[in-house]
Each structure stands twice: as structure tokens, then as C-alpha cells.
Length: 397
Image (cartoon, rainbow, N blue to C red; front, side, top):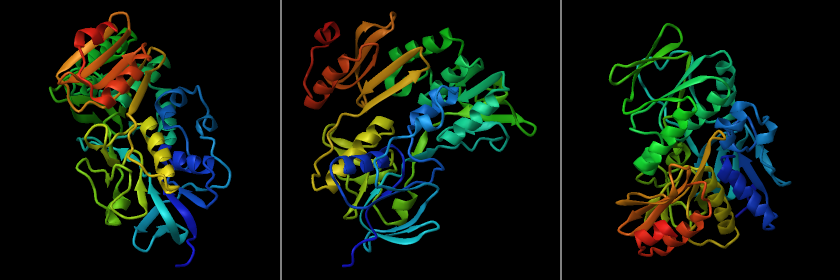
């Protein structure tokens, strides 16, 4: 077989793809690496989009990742087709390239709601730096911003824009912000933080439609409530980008991601996956798992790099999440808990320094902390070991 044009083709220049390339070079890989991404920017820290970059505290180049030398990094470059058997890929504007191994780090795309009035001007989604630019520019002349959704993006953007002097209202079907993954106790705490800083929360009342002439003027909820706003930011989740994987005939998982083994290998030999689109067999959780978070994507990219170097092993890192609501509070989480039947609180929710351990049959399935980061290492160990715990002792430790 002829030598490939590139030894490693990495499709996607986000957290997972960049981490894979970085780790390969750090570990002495001297072969050729092509990192292809559709974004106009080189790899950058996406969490900045809803936080420091959105507020103007960090400039564009300040978000860029420090990549090692010797990479062929191509921005504005889509991989249109992948043939795993022939080990070739078709790149937009560059023709076909052959590869030794490929890594699919295609990430996720925003989930767009098809509500009435979605075509109006002034409705924004946030995924990339360019989206943050548009939101920041329009928010400069806005008095009232409506944010649809009750999870990470909506809450983070609401905090950032409030700090910048905008009046913000969250509209969500959930009874409390951030409660879907963290439960009622945590949701009540975060709702209190948001309201204390001036963010209005319209809860238990999802989006029905948008109204306005040429641009959005108000959001109408399922109950008929009208929330006026100069602009809208949608925080309605994301869907894994599997278009390339599907067209290549790769197996997809139940969550819609790219089905992978515990070692993060796809159904095609020599093709691996990492990041938001990767749905893998978790040896820690005993189930298939797909996680959309920056830290997980970075960790999986590094794990795939080790596999490419002949050191494939089951990916057993406990997923770690974090989020900032401006400088009001920082949450950290390990898990994720698929379900739980008991919450054990250590510390004081009222004082804003607490950890919630989520128990399933008296075993730790996840843990959320605000102001008590040291508790997370214990949670990781208990989660990995599957140890039966004494709830009373856990609360007092």
C-alpha cells in the first residue's frame, strides 16, 4: 500500500481535535497531522464564548489555544466525505487525501427550535466566537434581553449580559434553572443567585412563538404570557454532528452520537471519535455515555492520541463539568448521574458553600459542588469504586 498523504487526519478543530494533536506531539509522534475545522478561527477555548469573550474581557486571540509546531491546521475546511475502507477523505477545496488513521471530533451543532416567528431578526444562537460577536454587538443597544432555556448557555449568557448592564429574563419549561441535571435543591440555589443579581426567571413555561414585525419584539410562552425584549438568545441545547459519520456508514448510538467502543474506536477500523459526538461504552458507568462538555472533550482527545500511539485502553476518566455565572458563583460536577433516589448535602446551601452527592441505591452516582472543590476527589473515588455509603457519614465528612 502506498504511503498516505497524511498519517493522522483529525476532523474538527475544537477541544477534542486540538487536544488529540497536542498530545500526539507532546508524546513524540513525528508523523504528519492534518487538523481540519469548519470554523473561521483556529482552535480556541469555546467556554469563553458565553463568558469572558462575550463580555469583552478577553480578546479574540486570547481565546486561541497554543498549538504545537508542525501541524497542518486548516480553518474554513469541511471534510465532505470519508471512506473508511479506502482510508480517503474529500476536503472542500482541496480534493482527496489519504490517511493512515482518522479521528472524528466533529462536535455538536446548536439545537434550533422551529417555533413560529423563528425567521425574525434579533434571534441568536451561541456556539462560536462569531455568534458571540453578533450577540455582543446587538446587546450594546438593547435594554431587555430574553433568553430561552434553563441550562448552561442561557444561564451563563444571562449572567454575562446582566453584568454588562442589560436587563435579562430567562424563559424555560423547567421549574428551576439548571435543575434538569442537578435536581431541585441545586435549582433553587441557582434561581436564587440569578434573581439576587436581577435576572428574572419565567419557569415551568416553555416557548410557544416569537412575535414582531421584521425583528423580534416579544416571546410568547405556552401559557400565553408575553415577555417583551429587544433581542433573544436561544440556549436550547445541541445535537451531535454526525453527518460525516453517517455518510461514511459508521454505526450511530442511541443518543444520536457516533457509536464507539470503550477505547473510543468507531465501527470502522482505524477511525476513532472524541468529544461531543462520541458515544462510548463507559466501563465506569456500565452504560453507553455521550457527554457534551469542554473538559470531557479535551480528555477524550488525549485518550485517542494514546490509542493512535498503540496504547489503547478503556476510557475510564470520570466526566467533569464546570460552569461560571459571571463572578457570582462557580459550579463543578462529576458524574453524570443518570438517575438518583437521594440527595445528600454536605456544607450549607444557604451559605453558598455546599456539595450535593446524588445517590442511587446508596452509591454515589454524581456530585455537584459550589465552593467545596475538595469534595470532588472523594466523589470521584466513590463513584469509580461503586462503594455503598452511609448517607449520614457522607453528609458530615
